[in-house]
Image (cartoon, rainbow, N blue to C red; front, side, top):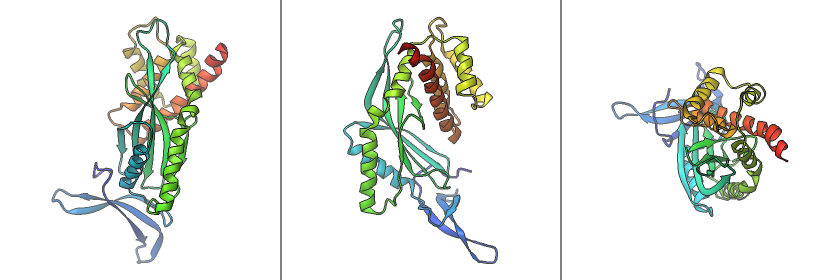
Length: 281
C-alpha cells in the first residue's frame, strides 16, 4: 500500500532476522513517511539481497538532471510514476521528428525525443535509462523495449569516478538516439500513410498484439471509435494512437500501463515493417 506520494522520501536498508534473532541473508528496503501525528515511520518497499545497492530515487533524479543539463537539447520533465516500489521519471526534448502524412490531413504530425529513468526498491527493475518518444499533438508517451535503445546503470552512484562513467554512457545514448530511431520513425510514417480496414485490425490483433488482455484491447478500441470522428480517413497511425492514448493517460496508472505501451508499440512497428514498409519499397 502506498503510504507516501513522495518518490524522493528517504530510504534505508535493514538486515532481516528470523524469529529467534538469527540474521538473514535478506535485507529490507524501507521508505520513510510521516503518520497523521507527524511522527516518522518506515514502510517496507521490498526485500532484496545483500549486494542490492538500493539507490534512492533522489539520486536518480540528480543523475537525470546532470545528464540533461549537459545535453545539447533543451529538456523538460514530462511525467513521474511512483507506486511505493517502482519509480519512473520521464523527460522530453526539443528534438522533433516530422511524419509523412496523408494529403487530406490538415497539419503535420510530429513526435519528440524523450528519455526515461527507471529504478525500483524491490529488486524487480534495474536502475536504467531508455529513450522514449512523445506525440506532440496529444502528449501520448511512446515506449519500446525492442526498437528504442536503453542501458543499465551498473555502478553505485556514490562513487564519483563511476558516476562520471554512467553520465557518459547516458549522454552517448542520447547522442546516438536520433539515428537509432530511424526504423520506428519510418514505421510511424507508413502507418500515417496507410488507411485502416477491418482486415488490418484483425491482423494486428491476431498476429502482433495477441497477448494484450481483452479488457485493455476493448478500452483502446472504444477510444478509437469515440475519438475518430472522420470514418473515411482513419489510418493505422490513428488506430495505434488510440492505444498509447488510453495507456498513457489512464486515471489509475499502474506499472502494467507502461509494459503494455511498449508491447503495443513493438507490435504495431512489427506490423508496419512486415505489411506496410515492404509494400512501398
